[in-house]
Amino acid sequence: MLVGKRSAITHGGRSKLAPGSRLPAEVVRASQRERLMIALVEVVDRQGLAASTVADLIERSHVSRAAFYEQFESLEDCFLATYDTHTARAGAQIVAAYEEPGLSWPQRIEAAMDALAAATQIWPAAARVCLSDVLTAGPPARERHEQAIALVRQMLRHSRAAVSDRSPVSKQGAVAITGGLRRVLYRRLREPRAKPQETARELSGWLLACSPPSLVAAEPRVASSRVTHTPPRPVDAHPNGDEPESGDERRERIVEAVLELAASKGYRAMSHRDIAGRARISYSTFYKQFPNKQEALLAACEVAHERLAAPLAPALAAAPDWAHGVSDALAAYLRAAAEHPREARLAGLEIYSLGRAGVEHVDRHAAGFERLLDPGFELSPQTSRTVAEAFAGAVIELLRHYASEQRTAELPDVGPELSYIALAPFIGGKDAQRIARYRPRYPTAAEPPARDRAAASRRRSLRS
Image (tube, rainbow, N blue to C red; front, side):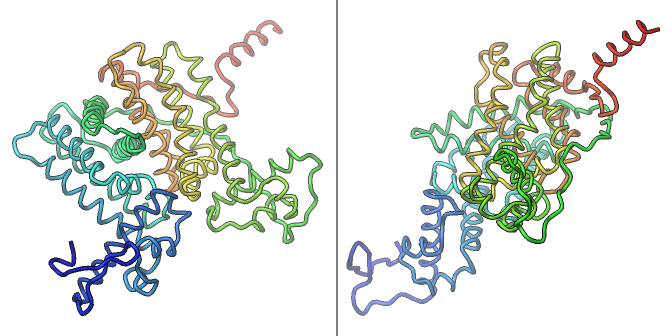
């Protein structure tokens, strides 16, 4: 209690010092800063960062606007300070548990997960904000998130150093693991009755199961010769260009315009004028199709997800069994993301510009990757469903990470490691590694699939 033994009186639910009492200025400033950060957690947890304002924090904390700007430059600055405070505290607890002397590698993982789960329960609202809303807060917050990935990688590399049969954790492996942890913890914290110890055990089991015994290497990736994304349309100087006759065609033009603009300049920087100009439509036509640009972005994200996920079902159907199907489907998905850079950037990164709505949109689509592993639970009934949740988090985090670094062309290279993470909890490390090393050779645009080539060969033989 900041006021110590000084007497206080209450006015309208607010605690104030008795007349004549004064606190030192530094104590007042510290109290104001703490109250503002508490208010930020409460406000952002309730409505998301994108919908929160400085006025919300002032009203919640009972701190003046002038005092707010003495402490912080902006709402985003307050968010980053709050994020740094809570993650530093949780990080210290996790590192202390992890560095306990005399622990084996599995024991270190278990101790770290126990500390992580316990830290999220101290103040669940703050944990939810740090796990989810950090992805919506722009580049500075993403840098903080990358630091968390680096910490995970450092811990896992250190813990495996003394284990001869385990490989060092790669950068993409740390990204995937961080995404899995983040998604599972956030979903558990939204449940009415969270069980931190059970969550810790499930996450420890997942981490230990998906740690490869040696580096998983794929065959060299065959570069694709086709360009599957739609080339940019010319932008009219005036947004009142010729309009297509069909409403569906107008909508498609808007969606393509959003895809192109989000990839080239980012969602936050694009305007309604930009969209109308790129789509060669009038403002009134835009508003007949979408009430605002947020809805246009969501529609474009649906299209992006459909294009990225299109190869999954064919790859599964063509595989000899479920395990190879998962590996092939992931390879096909990552290849599609490499060949559709606009769609990968929109679905993996720009969608978070919508705040909490974007986070929920991504989580709904991540459920498709959970279903990819459903047959595995029939093969291994004892495996926890948390494995599927964490795996889906790993996929979407890899997409976000590579899109943010503009390296989506490299995504096919992470296929073997991602396949191992998906399969090892069900079929064991040895078989998962064997399957993850295998890679089908996908045809390019100039090279038809094998069945088509065989049919063409039979036709040629008949003609001859």
